Image 1 (cartoon, helix red, strand yellow):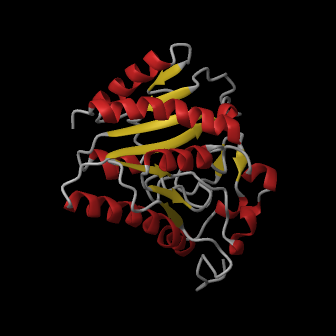
Image 2: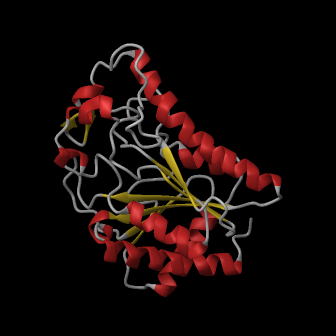
Length: 262
């Protein structure tokens, strides 16, 4: 970036999208890695389009899943507007994974040796507005006495280049503080879909110190929460996204009917 230039211009999309902000369900969905867009001034970060279309650029398929669930439950959804390679909104600012110089073996040219002012510009334009929108929505709900279920939506690659072993799980439930809500929902899901390979804190743990969104907006507020991971080869097209959104949605509907214990 040229010194003094703002990250987002009039031709760029917003930093985040709020879908169905007035949704009446006692649930709020968030999608941290919803998009693989890159601000125009960053010239695709020096990457080929094929790299941005990989799992390193965004959570493949999750945009469809997220909007399907928001519509089904009449619930708000807050979705990030830009690639995790520009600024990962689910990583602690200034940590190495926040603006990665390399991702699953692929160098990211525009992130190497990044000047402190350029790094700050990305946080100011993308990270803080996204999390501000989540906080504002939660504050408004809590002021009314509501205690919404906070649901984070993600997808994972079946295989990493840097660790080439198949990941057998079809859906994963991750947790840190709120193990009870995940355990309750996993039990409901397994009862409905006994043949599905369900990951319990897999393909990685929800207590990883790298994560940000669930910790800050759900655990610190004491809200019941779920963090979902869908395998990307299963939700990579519209039909698959709708199928797996409905499978999780069936379990979520039963959870809301019976109560989370919050």
